[in-house]
Image (cartoon, rainbow, N blue to C red; front, side, top):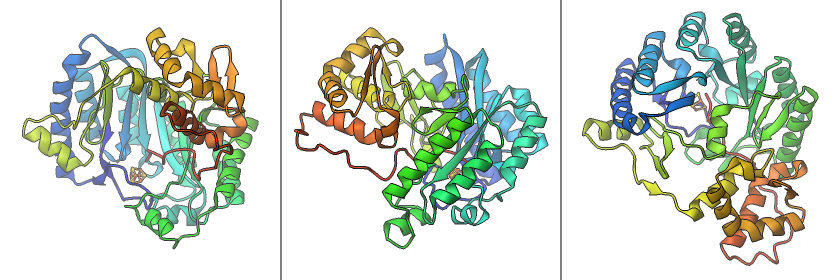
Length: 397
Ligand code: SF4
């Protein structure tokens, strides 16, 4: 459920989000109800195992507005007992009244965007909270009974150094959380910091420095008992984000709100990105989704490759239907075997995975395998060229 409002725009972010004016929130809520009613029939027989309220900044909603959004979800969809219910929160907006409202609704996981523990870096990133606020928000959440807690961090942005990143990591790990996400900065052209980086006007760390920061992430978190279960996500045993595994393992999901994506019944669609466009479609009785894309065995195989190799376990036969696995092997079997033969992948009895030492380059390995299926002659492309970032930017708050 995409909540398209933020208190302020961060300097790196190009997510679908706008100002939190009360009229705009009420309109979004009215139309969320309309979209939910439209989509619900396809899920009439389904109990959802997870719900993710993301954004934007769901914690920017008042308790009353949050209550309306949650009532819309539960009026139209069945949420399974014990479901993982995550809400993205900006540490600045975490407060007792909201924690009470979230807890009463059944939210059992809070994902907070900390990004950094240095005040000057937070200012550069356009964050509205100070360096001490994430710890205070975590303490407040714990006092209200929340145990499923995660922090989002960012590295590799202009001015960032491995030493400063190490200090942020240590502050984050000292909070003793079960889950952590860390995303490498990607300069998005339409954002203030991204445009400056692309124009050469910002002091970007080079790819080697970013790779070092990524290595420090894995090493430092491992000392705190965490493993990297996805390129950008780490956790203590048993604390993987179930909802995100739905995306990575290609289980069906339904999205509501501007820019939300869905994969349901073998069809993919993405809602109009901007609030206004999404709202205008619903108000005029149109589907806010653009083109519906019917999956084919090749698109299924490409997605399994792209998403599955980001997982620490890699591609595992037992995670997919026999038909999906067969599609993967038919399309990418030769490339996967070649990647294993050249040390780009480890083969294991269940499938393949990116070796931990190459995880920063997982996207390059994936591209190398995919290129073979696309009948591109990669024979002369022996070395893997490091790309500056292993992951998309943080979706979070
Ligand atoms: S990073 Fe999060 S809080 Fe900042 S503008 Fe983007 S969605 Fe809003």
